[in-house]
Image (cartoon, rainbow, N blue to C red; front, side, top):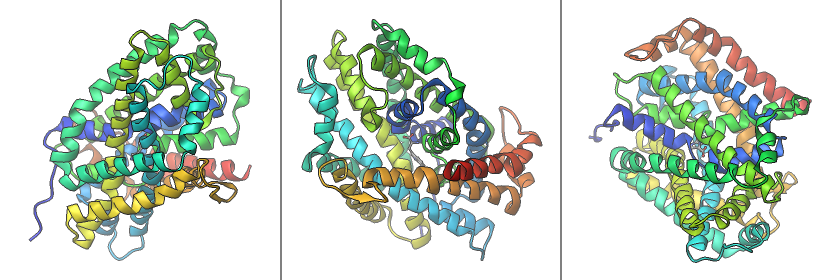
Length: 443
Ligand code: TRP
């Protein structure tokens, strides 16, 4: 007999785990650089609109589908629509988990490496932080080794299971991360010359918005909220029936937004005050923040703590990515959890190697971009938006919008979703995704 399926020990455990999944490199690393590539404050506004219009409704929907079925994404679609091809939506999710984690782990590895570089004092005042970053990722061996270490850790925790692994890890880590970001914001906005950065980040110039802005904002919203691939379906599947879905969803989205906005507030004043380029792409956080630390009293100390927590925030997100693939193997293929975790972690490690090398060590291109960028492009433009769209269509028309709303409202202690929610998931949210995808790709 299979052991009973685990569930979260408390209501808070679910919110923390799901927020732990959402809050990660997407907030601290990706959000600021995507803002920087899209012209600043106007992008932030577009992003907020997308989170309200697409992010929140999909968050509620995914949690509901998980709690309703108590299954991994593939199993969830199979349970609600047996003998139909809808399980393929879950399969896109499993594939997306694999793809995302392979480059995510590489970036997390940079974070671990920066932790050690800060501790050993090799990133102090006077360093050319831009050159230091590009030199670091261009090395062949070291980044791959850090990536291996990160995947091994992720695999180990997932091998241990939901309560002992994920539940315990996030309870302590989330609060500390929050305090550290606040400290960085205070240092950033008090730097001399910070106002130009604040203006860039907070004063929107709406003439700069194009369809591409909307597409990038949608991609960022799916990514940062962990939506569109069933990670939240999977976490929702470990909920007990008496948990509050609309309330939890609001908390998770709110916490995630807060951390992303604060990360931008920590980074942009420093970008301008210290003379970096806001279009430094994936290196932005790694270039700007060490420079800020170098200018703080006890900077080395705070820098070390920050990169430690950067890595930890990455870890709590990585857990949810790996969990989707592992839950599928455990639930559907009857594989043992430790074995599934080891196997999948190793596969993701392998896919991450060319991603890491393509940052400059070896010329590996797909469709005219480095393999690393290609994987990111694949998830942000196709896997997550299409996965999310099909999930909404499924909830709205196959499971039906009224049942989704009813199921989400069941045992809710905070607030109940009105009929407007059915309108949203049937018409408005899917239409928004379709328009943005088509216009972003073809206009
Ligand atoms: N949301 C996480 C972050 O911002 C990354 C992540 C975890 C994710 N699980 C996911 C992204 C599922 C997409 C889908 O860092």
